[in-house]
Image (cartoon, rainbow, N blue to C red; front, side):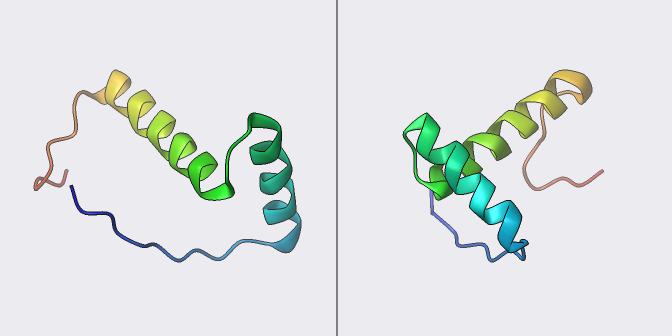
Length: 57
């Protein structure tokens, strides 16, 4: 699986808070964001079914 890069816009306050949460969890901000995204996708798939890559609804 290829690793892709994603650039986001985020307020300074939110970024500072993200770093605090990530530090508390013993993770980097990048790892924390990946976990949040994974959890979001898992919740979506629980509700709507597995997302098939290559298909858009």
